[in-house]
Length: 213
Image (cartoon, rainbow, N blue to C red; front, side, top):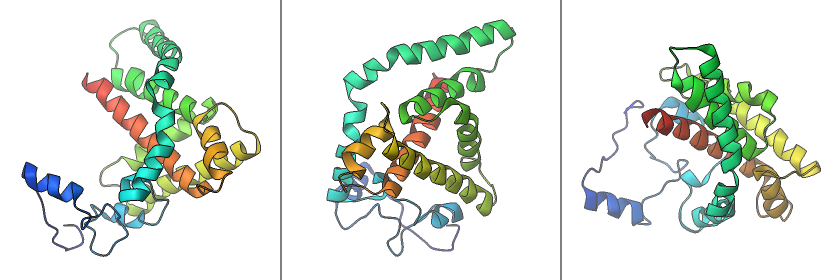
């Protein structure tokens, strides 16, 4: 691969099941010999671990911390706000007249607005989030620029965690600050990394699925 190393590639269903369930294999990217996908991935190894790179009990513990935020009840409660966001996007598209590009006009805008509301990010900072996540997802970008965008987002979220620690609100970060950071179960950096994971997974993935649909 990119760094000259030669990792194994498993393609058969049964082999993949073994790799995913055998404790001799690990998702921890900091372990020696881990087949990192790029120079950007290598540079990000020690920048805020999330449950995507955790094994066993540690992974299960962080997953349990997140689960209350994504219950069916909480998701249903967000429906009116999501509906208002979609309606606003469609109204703007109709007002502008055709033709229209649904990716930036509906999918990306809806996903970003909803995830910012979930995390408690002020609406005036949404464009900062959009530009930084777009930069992170660009293929072939110089290493310094790609890692710089992620660092900017991470630092912003650390500051937001500190702000919610001082003045909690009714949002994802505030609830985890009260339940996890204040009790010592999680550090502010770990919560910021978790929020960054929710941002990128909830923003890009949701927008891509809406576009494909």
